Length: 519
Image (cartoon, rainbow, N blue to C red; front, side):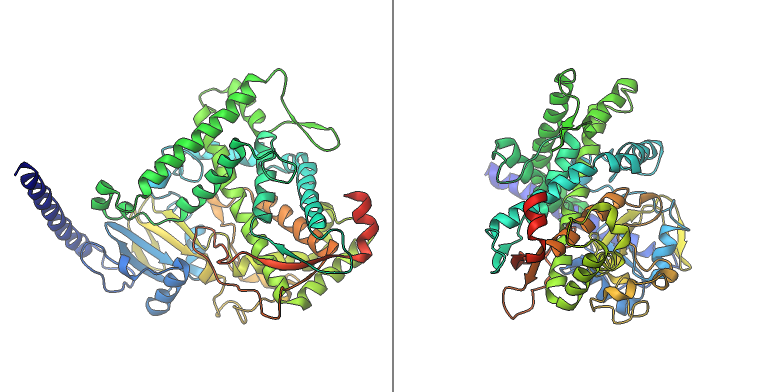
């Protein structure tokens, strides 16, 4: 009887809460400003959540065709503004850059963003500006990027070595290569060696428990960052965690925090013996953790262990899945367009030759290779939906936007807008040749713009360009069969491929001497 009574009390509590939430939602809906943007019909309590389909960016683009480039939605209790045109996104990233400078407080940011204190999740203010300065000046400045050049080259050359081994150095026949984790492991090695001086992937790397845990944590973090937690929009769901996402987020945070703290403690304990990592040529260089711990000694409050862990976690999040995903898409596009692949190879042969390997300094003289990267980022931006939140009342295209409104900028839709791009769904790197293409302003914004523009853009473009260039220079490539490579989009924050990439690879005979001598 007691259990039945208890169950009835819970039932009535839920019913009363739902009723109150329904009345509150009706009240909030009536409170929309008279100059609010067009909005689809909504449902009580859940608002427009029922209209969202996967993939998310395509769902929003479909709605925008019906209701316009500025659209108001309500995700449960959260007001949402969706913008998807060149002019509206430009307003949000320039005129209203400060007004839309905040991030929404979502559950994932509370845990994986160290209570919204990391640069990805923190609101605009003194703390955010200090973090931005640290990352821009101390970690991604031109001098820092140059300092880590030999490390990047080593890891990309190591990837080429592994492909040669896979092909058994057979210059006559093609070998099947699965790219399921090739680019991801490349980026994870680059980032972890830059951060902590350690490699976690490769045939010559012992599969330690620490390496396995880092693999898991990075992959799990990217999944959770892109997952839709209904508890963030419907408070009732937060009570019960029906999806199990909050528990998963907490568990990932605990494991990741332990791993990152271990790296910091290791560097601190061995500071007198080990203060740098070694490159292949024996040169000693400071890791990012070394740099941050030195700053901590000077300003302990500004560089607490928690702040350092937040910076490291942001670097891992922003530096692995994003760049590896872009390389995945770029190589898939090249396999489906042999003409483009041949043109890129001809450019490299003309500018670099066949007597040495392409280097990072050559990239400035390879405009067509750069056009391939730009066209890939246009078609498959690493962040198809950019999420901000309004810190104050403002206006977009004459429509009123209240403070606390979540902003969704559909970069994917913008970069495929037929009003802006000729044949927008076609892969045509030639559209980026010359200087005419960028006269339209905000036509290509894969790294964002304004205050929250990605500070790692310079490093990403270097790694992507050099990796793709060396793959084209060193190997001949074909599709596995007559069928085109499947370009289906998977689900996730960074627009992954739905199916792992597979290709046929053969070392180039013209590069035989160079490959055997220099790698």
